[in-house]
Length: 191
Ligand code: B4P
Image 1 (cartoon, rainbow, N blue to C red):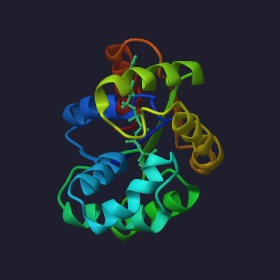
Image 2: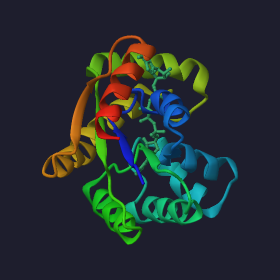
Image 3: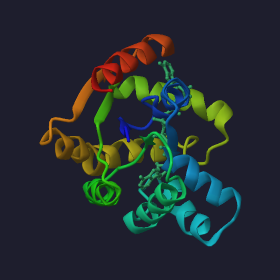
């Protein structure tokens, strides 16, 4: 299996680039953001529990997200590999993911870290709010909260993977195609 984590702050383009990467490399796309929004739309118990956290710009509790990812890994036993998008977002999630993959004799091959300035991130999310209909995009206070949560809870995930020399920084500003090409160059070095 070949497994990639696409890492970066909210608005760094993880979702945008993931769609292109999974086509290029025939990987299974696992976006916890998309999975959670699907649960909310379907009004499931999990979705109802997750909604208030998302609306406030907070992270959904680890056990909820880890359970969701565990199910998805089990439901896709024959894939070439996974592209994890927006997961892991805490060190506890990263440790849990390592354990889930090791049960399958697999590991994370590389962590691609999109580098984008905070002012550019806020600009992109304000723009996305015009069309996304996402409750967590519209409010500037929630957007700032998401950036703060990222710094406090998610950035340490990059330190976790750095100890295994798995992190590669990739320029995340510029055209979508240029960023995609830079990501492909790094993936090709590892595959
Ligand atoms: P996510 O759905 O993961 O969303 P995101 O981080 O906001 O966005 P992403 O980085 O994918 O940016 P995008 O491509 O859309 O999370 C939403 C919420 O769900 C979280 O806040 C949290 O509450 C919860 N959650 C999710 N995963 C969780 C987990 N593991 N644990 C706990 N809670 C979790 O790009 C942003 C915008 O920029 C788009 O409009 C795009 O068109 C634009 N853009 C992209 N690339 C660009 C470029 N190169 N130039 C200009 N604009 C660009």
